[in-house]
Amino acid sequence: MPWPDLRTFLAYLEEQGDLLRIREAVSWEYEIVALTRQTSDLQGPALLCERVVGSAFPVLSGLFAARRRVAQALEVPEERLYDLYREREERPITPVLVDSGPCQEVVLHGADIDLYALPILLHYERDGGRYITAGMQVVRDPVSGQRNVSIHRMLLLDRNHLSVYAPPGRHTRAVIERNLDAGRPTEIATVIGSEPALQIATQARVPLGVDEYAIAGGLRGAPLELVRCQTLDLEVPATAELVIEGRTLPGASCADGPFGEYPGTYSAVKQAPVLEVTAITWRRGAIYQNALTGMPMTENHWMMQPAATAMVWREAYKLCPEVRAVHVTPGGAARHHVVVSIKKRHDAEARNLALALLAAPLGAKQVIVVDHDIDVFDPLQVEWACNVRVQPDRDVIIVPNLYSPTLDPSAPAERTSAKMAIDATAPLGRLEEFAPARIPNFERYDLRRYLAPERAAGRSGR
Ligand SMILES: Cc1cc2nc3c(=O)[nH]c(=O)nc-3n(C[C@H](O)[C@H](O)[C@H](O)COP(=O)(O)O)c2cc1C
Ligand SMILES: [Mn+2]
Image (tube, rainbow, N blue to C red):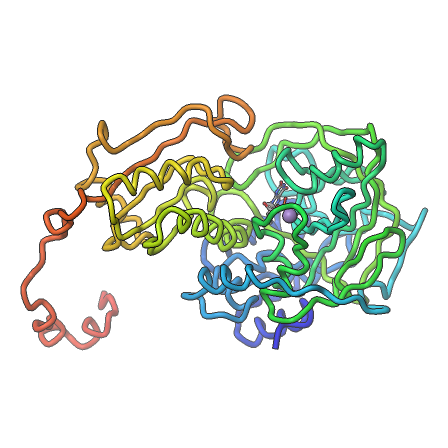
């Protein structure tokens, strides 16, 4: 049975000892973010901060700070997360509309709207202000009539205004621009705190026109239930914790940034659209959710990784049916660096594949192709392959000026980067010459027979 709402998922995590309630009062200024950083580094529990100074709302932060919780969100074993994510992403289930839902138990309009009542967090030292980071923006594309749901950070501007950070290339941005061309505002419903599959589905790398609500249905194996917004022609999950309804102000923009972003560095100050809030609705006892980003790995990265991996896999499979595994690595911020293993069938295959993946829509900056005997998830093995199977003048290809993600601070120009392909495969048919030296009958011998019992059981014994 899929999780019906966020609260049931949290109750399950608590039962597993994977949700930590913090009952002392904590601050929205850096404190919750610092604690979330620490639990992320420990792969520790999600944090539910029950009392936040200056706000009546509790804060959930670090829900996906450990990968196991992404797997639990989809109710799949962690070791099968990437494969099952990919399969289910390809089988969307259309959401259903229901008459009412708890997400509108409380409704505020007009002068009652006050964003300062929300515990919007201050994250990093040089940030331009307080940012909503786990808001899922729902918009409708004026061309296809289809919905789009994705996550974009929002800067708190005043009681009823927010920025929307959606750079060129994002579907939300495309919708805002299409409306702007016709001189129209864009209606945006921002959902904070939903059942967990939708939060992962927002990261799906599917074309504009594919509704991420349907992707969420596929991931959870059952349709989402939606209700109509109070002031917009949009729909939101019936059991959402909190919804901010609003419209962009055509022609208005504001400075957005800096913000400590997913590469681990700050994003620069850019102009962003301004959203005027038309209503705030919530479920009684609403939980405000925050998501940490910054130096990998954070929940931002764990949430992006399944969809990024699925996209690379699909692109790789088009060229190479013998792709064995894909890793969009942590050091590359779960987006910029890719390692792929293949069973090579012709000598140019690895180079061909690496170059194709550099040009593919993910925008990866570095692609390493290894043989099937290398575990792409083990950085030692990957580096070892780059050591003994690579001659840089022959096997490293550098291509200038390709499309790239926006937030790489080393980029020479917006959305532009030089890229590097590394063919770390052995020459075709000669893998044995490039294999690790092996000991005959290795499995027959067992050191554990001679070790003290606690060492044999794998403990350090120190
Ligand atoms: C926690 C979190 C925060 C994110 N913040 C932003 C953001 O501020 N701006 C942005 O463009 N993408 C952000 N992303 C990535 C987008 O949500 C993601 O690429 C999404 O797939 C884009 O949707 P689209 O394909 O419909 O454009 C964030 C992702 C996560 C998980
Ligand atoms: Mn989309």
